Image 1 (cartoon, rainbow, N blue to C red):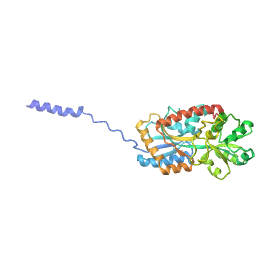
Image 2 (image 1 turned 90 degrees about the vertical axis):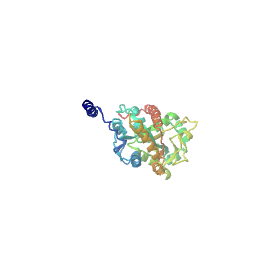
Image 3 (image 1 turned 60 degrees about the vertical axis):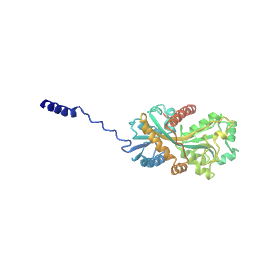
Image 4 (image 1 turned 30 degrees about the vertical axis):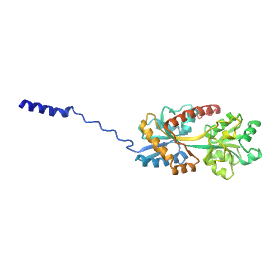
Length: 334
């Protein structure tokens, strides 16, 4: 009897030694604030939209979303910072056509790979550019539309010039694509920023500009700039009467013309799929709200939510398109 009791006691004392407590469950995401990097200065359209999205995300995620501006090198510094962060869902970036489609060809050395180093979440919006001319110059040369402009430029190669916010800017590349597709010659006049470029057209110093629709809308409405067409594949909701360049340039080689300033949310590569899908779900829902649509409309942007796969495919297409345009233009920053 004593032997049985002793054996039972040995078993009882041995059990705690062999039993292992279950591993602590990983904390549910998100368990702390999320950093939303904007690779451009505060106060710009991407910054404004990121802050609006962040304010709404904090309600759905239950954690603060802190917008952090990391400008520099055409957006490369901020994009590179996010590319090198841990893929844990706590750092995201508002990428743009510059950081993920133009700069890879424009800069001879890019510190990140726009495809391999990121996990696309969703496209947020695109902002059409618009083809504009000084009204006095347009009247003087009898140019009333895209067809007139192309025909004049073909008959008078190099006589027209177009302003842009600098080499490699969206306005510059829009002009180069237009020249290439329409087979015309116009002289590029780069300025240090979009504002002085637009001012040069307003003052009559330059003839034509492919300007951001949000920036140009007030002067279009005031009759200070003559708008011919938008650069996107679809007409702009803010100016539905304006044709697209592809529509207005039908038969002139401009079919398929499509350039816009787009931006969207990305995370570091290898971010868990469930986190990407959650962010996609919540941001897409935000973009469909009436107040977000109204806010985007005020800056001339159009909401364009996508799946992660659709956004990734867009980046691939845009990389190829802008790679060719940048090479044709000869633009280089470094």
